[in-house]
Amino acid sequence: MSVTIQFCGAARTVTGSCTLFQTKSGGILVDCGLFQGPKTLKALNYGAFPFHASDIHTVLLTHAHIDHSGLLPKLVRDGFRGTIVATRGTIDLCSYMLPDAGSIQESEVVTLNRRNTARGRSAVTPIYTQADAIASLDAFRPVEYETWVDVMPDVRARYWNAGHLLGSASIEIEFAGEGAAGQPLRLLASGDIGPDAKLLQPDPEAPTGFDYLISESTYGNMDRPTTTTEGRRQRLAAEVRNAALAKGALLIPAFAVERTQELIVDLIYLMERSEVPTAPVFLDSPLAIRATDVFRKHASSLDPNVDINRLLSSPHLRFTETVDESRSIAKLTGFHIIIAASGMCDAGRIRHHLKRWLWNKGCTVLLVGFQAHGTLGRFLEDGAEAVRIQGDEIKVAARIRRIDEYSGHADGPELSRWIAARRPVRRGVFLIHGEELALTGLFERIAERIIPTAQIFRPIMDDIFELSTPTPTPIDVTRRRRLTPEAVVAFDWHNDMSKLILAINERIEAAADDRARGVIVRKLQRALEEEH
Ligand SMILES: [Zn+2]
Image (cartoon, rainbow, N blue to C red; front, side, top):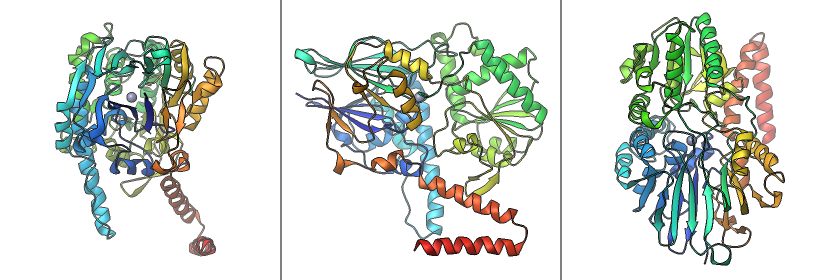
């Protein structure tokens, strides 16, 4: 008798969520997400899974975000023949998001191959195509919240609203006879947990009493001031008014799904009450336009106090569907608002708007979501003076602002309250889906006060533990690791490299004259030669 857990992703990182439960009858995956951010992590998307896709019996999907669902088309293409169990909201969102991700993979490879050819390197094929993504949609089966489903013999699962995104769930799993004294082994995978009092979503729900809890930690080190609907709107209003005074574009990089719809609802609400200047709001994302339709369809399951249908149909809203339409808004001057994906600026149309505007001090970039290490959004958040976009160096003169009120994630106190409310937890809590500071922050919040320190684990990618034993037993995986533990945790060298190049350019430009520039270049040359 044995059940093991294998952390195939999002362990000491915040993307690529993927956890494998292996039983004698087959494997169950919770999520199969895309790695985003540092190049070392993104390279894993192209490599082999740390398991055979055909050995996976079922996928239990927590929600539609690409860092949780984005490798499902690859899983199906690699031989997975089971079902992907998800709520109806998740299925509707995935039916747009996965094909969109497929076309992003295809176009990224076109750019990459152009560069590879120029450098004499061989061409790469996309992780998966739009056609692969469409084919994978056949594997989805709907599940209702709070209703047991049989996953395979002796394993059942139940979905609970996680309040993070339309359709999002925490998943309770029971393995018959694998717990203490022949009892079922009970565990709960949090998925991503929403904050309390989130616009459009209920507070997260889940039962109590588990052997194991697997909890996300994204904002584990954050303590946000509590906010109200009115407080959140006023924060946004202040940012919009200041952006209007600066007389340039207000660029809002946003996840196409939910964050975008929340922002539109609030922006239109504020404009209708003349609390901010009226201006066109461009929704420059075909995916966000589709997602907005899904929100209209599911409006009855969302917040009854918000007239979603009316606000999402405002004449101030302009949908730009085609690439030509998107290009034409790049010609605009003066105050206007552009909402475009991706939320972390590492792909999508937001990048050409940033390229067009970042150097302009009239522009405002408003960050409204989590920015992972190694993404363009994180560089901007950290105050970079210049950034590289599609190979070009762009000076950052725009006002970079951020507000946390639209976060889809619980903060440290909310996560620890959520963990506390699941007790008793008999065997262990695994903290995953967080960067180092966030994991440490959440660990310190719950250690002893909520969970005995010895029962809290912070696994690293590719770690495996036996769960049928009274405490989780680590299994030796030294030879099976895709990345060394240092490489998972360490800041990516590619990022350091881009920073170095920018720093060199800046020093050279700032030098008094050509002689001084020559001195800098010779010094750098000497440093390189000493390294040999
Ligand atoms: Zn999420």
